[in-house]
Length: 277
Image (cartoon, rainbow, N blue to C red; front, side, top):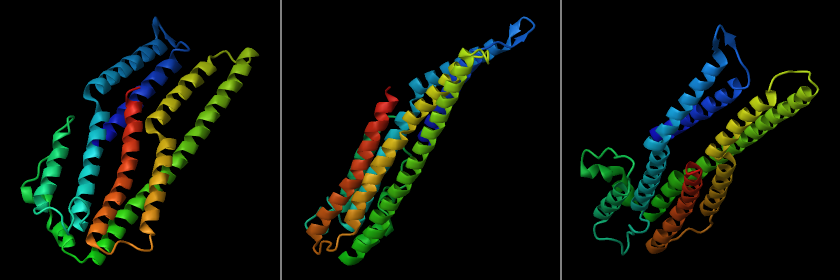
């Protein structure tokens, strides 16, 4: 997403600028009457200030959160409609499911404040021919499509993201521990007057930037929430006896979609907390 990319790029620029300022602020590079290190420090601080103002005014993080929330809501509505899940039951459901779907989509759009989504060229594009075709299939075929196209696909995505975030969390933990070890060694050498440079200050600035980045990305928290969601969906997908009636199936889809929604709510809560710090 554009908002996600802008948020992470500007966060990297901000942390990188602050770390650069901290590093070059520990020594001097004289060139005539000019201290080049001081100029670099001032330029880095100015860059960090500009990025900070952008983050506070443009709020790309909010755009990202709203875009994902809208996308997830639209996706669950589309699947509920296509396979006959609540509130689009095929037996005892709404008289005009298309109108209900369009109304729910409109509610999603109205809740968006950070940006305006591109509207459909025609109203009918919100309910595709493929969605209507799936909705008209027998229950067993709809169940198989839902199992493969929604539950298993989402479960594999959660599993992949859980592994990726866990590996990144471990990698960053090792990197930060290595930086701190270097700082400790440098502090001992400085106390023994073997080196005459504020290496611990430099290491501290780099470690602080790394910690701030890992808190922004939430690697460990995401790994846990994705793993839990994958486990829950795996339990749903492996049930021996799926519903055999339309009302039971509509309720089953509702519970499955709520399982997916819980992960998103946890994600949104953790990222909103980080963005407000």
